[in-house]
Image (cartoon, rainbow, N blue to C red):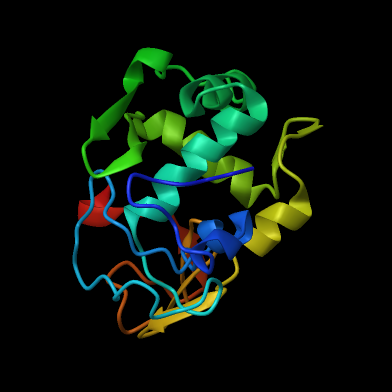
Length: 189
């Protein structure tokens, strides 16, 4: 599948895989919608898969890839694959919206979730991807996605979209006496 942007990707950037995008290791350092622009490495400074950098370009382009591969938007896929199976009580597709900008072809997708609905996602992962009698997420994926594939300093790591923290990680204000994983975006999102 051809992925590009307003500023065309280089041949090296086009070698980034979906797994690189999940690990925030794409090596693509282009402007993105909802970009923090903090500490972005120079373009071409790291090959895909070799350097972790938390950035919205990786996140936003995954939404584009999902839609092209499934024919569903992020919000439609979330509703059918997460909201309905987990019997979420508060979420509706109106709680998600795309935000477009001049920086990129790939919009950011913002979602609002109640605490109780988000807690269901946490329970799903704590139960190894099972919800009741149904294996919604392969247990192997749950395990692999919550492992630190990148060390990001002071006992913290990064999996596939999950932040990880070692037990009593000195650089993690919510660290506990056991290893953990959690989702956290820029500004606590």
